Image (cartoon, rainbow, N blue to C red; front, side):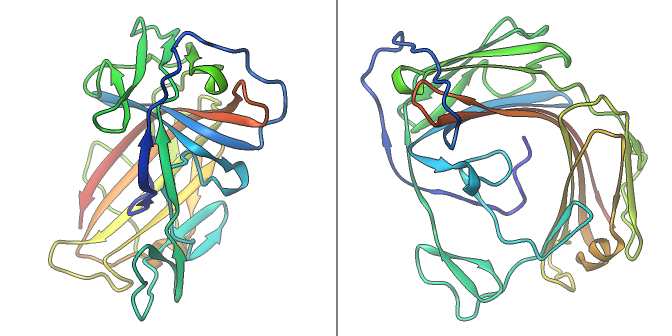
Length: 298
């Protein structure tokens, strides 16, 4: 899963480890899910992968969750057009007070707090490349680790049906979703240096696989020691269907920092769903993704 550039992590105020046994699995509730207490991510990319999970003590309403994570907050988009969001760094003067952050121009918002908890192991099976994946709570770090750990292991081939089982007591959940297939970008040509249009539409194309969704992200930052016209960085995030083509509006490309600049194009295929836990109304977000990217400079 691609984290939004320069987003802010939720402030951890504590970690709670449950003493409940790990084998007290309860059947998921049939009530509609209105808030999430956990997230599981299976992210694969060329030559590597990583998987992680997080569970929080206080449920987060679904209406307050951005994209696919509980643990990230993000500035307000500068502009929204044609399914794409433009983000430029907001300016707050005077600077925001401690425990607040600059959410939009002239707007300081309270920094959310979260307490992460041990909700029990999560087991993933069904992969054609990996017999089993285990996500477990690491009390030393206060977060979840994975076995196998992040690295060169391929979590799935793409197209399989992945099944997830885990959590204990009220956090128990079962899940199943298709593994997204690899991303093959056909435009721009990723075998040559990456360049972005300054004042024109940016066309991105890929081989469609009819997945749930695609996310195309273009990130631009001023080259080391320089400052772009609109600040040191900016990015465009477009969430779209897996039809094989996307046009990023000219106005958004023109608003990004000018050369000299560092570039990154990432194209990600996603499968995502929220599954109910044993506690009525609460669920776990499961997000599987395949992505590819190209970095450049101009």
